[in-house]
Length: 357
Ligand code: CUA
Image (cartoon, rainbow, N blue to C red; front, side, top):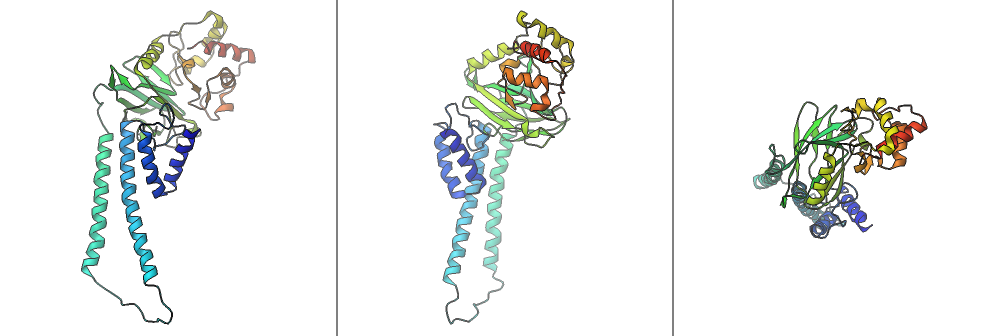
């Protein structure tokens, strides 16, 4: 509970522009890097104030630097103004006009040169960070993942490992014992989306017919949340991203499971046959079966995911029943229509889906 609380306070303080409080929490953040907000390093809601990846840390450092300079200017200016108001206020019986000064070269030079220098410093510091986090080639030994934005879900393609998944990006914290960068290639299948997991990296647009890149370098395991950050249609707000950062061995196990093709379980053969006879297979893929669509999420290992509908509900039997019956009940506007199946058929298909582990 304390974990949710501190994340919320930090974000709130920041967005209200309560700079002194924000700076105070900056110290708290430095402590948080060694003593995580949550036991696994992840905050319960998207926040850039608890970074767990190199580029996210660089972005936060620049933010604090800019805020520190701005706060200093604010404090100096507000103090001078208060001092003038108090010291030079009109006293009783004093009706004289104060001396009027025009055309002072030293004063005008000072208030032109000082702000210019400050803006130049802020520009240089920001530009340096922007160039460092906008790598256009993959860092050495990085894991490459292609992220494809769809209305309204995310596809994650692991070309080197040879499988495709959806909704949840799983990455290792180290590979062969070394810290691992994850180099994302961002593509869109339809409109402009934006990939943003604030604890792990900056926000980057996902544009049709254009390729962008983003790299992450997680330094703590955990489940990090993010979301599409560019309005992309009805269900934009439910285009959630889950990134699970694993220990190396755990990630290897996850990968080898994803690489398996599906084996139909005898217990769900009715559902299996029904699935292959309906239009499901035009959009969805289940490797090892004739279902080979690529318009909708790959379902080969559906049950290895914690959520369905790009994070909109938990992946439980009950929610799967509701989704297969009519996705529009859960995610109005989603591209998947109700297949008008009978309750018994819905039951059979869900029994089959539950075998896709
Ligand atoms: Cu995709 Cu907003």
